[in-house]
Length: 421
Image 1 (cartoon, one colour):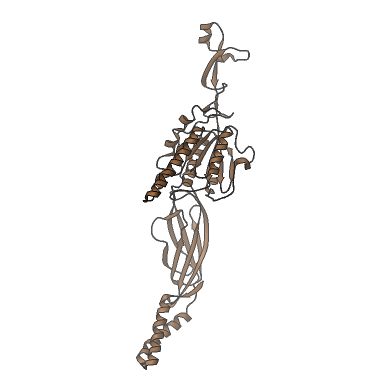
Image 2: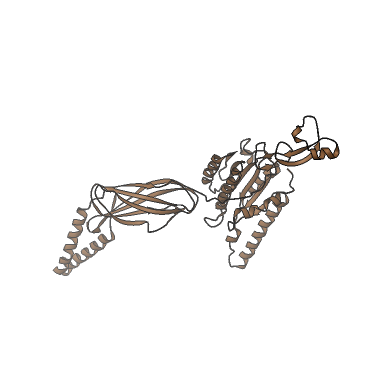
């Protein structure tokens, strides 16, 4: 441990030195008598000071949690000899909040008996956080010398975004060949009635519509619509992060992507992910509960990154994006590279839905007249961008986090209606 003198040592040394010097100069023995005991105490205190030998271990009751969950951090202290006073401090990373008490403690340590400090904390933001930076400070006799040491015992804790239950989401315009909840546009084997036509060689007898056959004196068969699943591609724009912490554009994008992935995977759809920003990475579409875990784990590593490199989707490997996928994009519509990538996907005949995650209501203009005019011009520019995207066939809905995501998604089927791919 690193030794250092305390403010008390400095004050006593200054007082003793001043009294001794004044007594010698003025010839006043009473001042020397005052300085002598102080000097003796300082000498004894420094000579008898020994650094406390304390071992520290840190434990966390769980390493995976959801936003808002509480967990307990325990700090265990052990020493071979008694320590009367040991000051312990814990540094909490951003994303965790102390529930009760403080982050500094003054505790005694008994020889060969662990002293355990339990700290209740709460996860306040999604992400991978490292907790466990512990600082110790011990004191010598009379608190004249202190010994300090920082222990890096950090452990990674993965805080997953809190998910919202979505009952209905955008219906994909095109379906795949596997069974699912959506009605295909092509007739085939299914339970949903589609149409009636004349009997043709190869039709099954069980499909004959005997009511129409008896009225028209000609065999007619029923046509059915097969139930199919769909492919969903989640597109995350991580070029920028705007807004207050906890409700910023990237926070809303991560929570919204997790909610949408959970909804579609529960309906037997295949869901993939593309993180388009300072770093470009992706997750191939798949289905099942395991895919939900992979997507959420992937979302924890998404961070806003500044990059001057021009990026486009040509760098993605082939077959990363299914040719029939519905693209659900989460973007603040700030960086033109992300807007260009989404426009390029639409030009490739992909149905694209953009969820604008920039909380404009949380951004207030400055009081000056010029800045208020600039603020109104900025909002008009964003409204014009959304209008241009909608006019080109890309529906844009706004979601600021004040209302459930489902309330924003409820308008998407109406916006997608009539679009031909």
